[in-house]
Length: 177
Image (cartoon, rainbow, N blue to C red; front, side, top):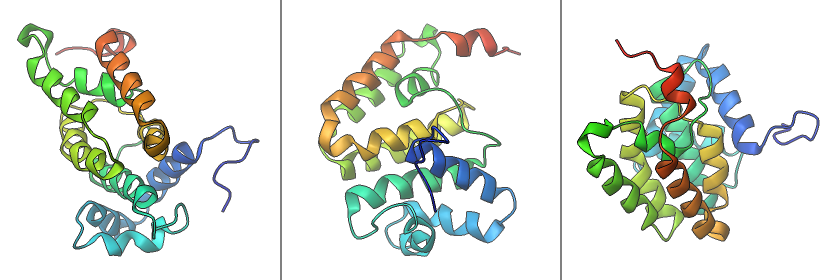
């Protein structure tokens, strides 16, 4: 399976997210197995699908794929979103609340020093983002997590930058009822 071809212009993360979203629309068993990927006791049920995309023997490779796969299976989005995780967190809270809760969640993510810790912190954050209907770019997040071990500090700086840039095109496109 070609996952990162120059012709397609897709990163491995974007290709994986596209694959999962497309397959979720027609395969309920696939979705059920991927939903179990974020629980250590049942994660093995998703390995048959993850092994095509990463080395499941390496937790620093497997855990990001399992996290994103489970999040997608739970959210069942029609398409990948366009906001990074930093901006996604900021959009979960109203500015009138001074975003103290959002800042606390971001700080906890920025304090992570390993991929295992980052995945642990991201699980509830992804549930929050999904519950608020924020259009998260799962492919970008997966790509960032794949490089977290090597460029963790750089990823954290990007997440902080996204968060503090605050609202832009999402607000102009988001109609409040």
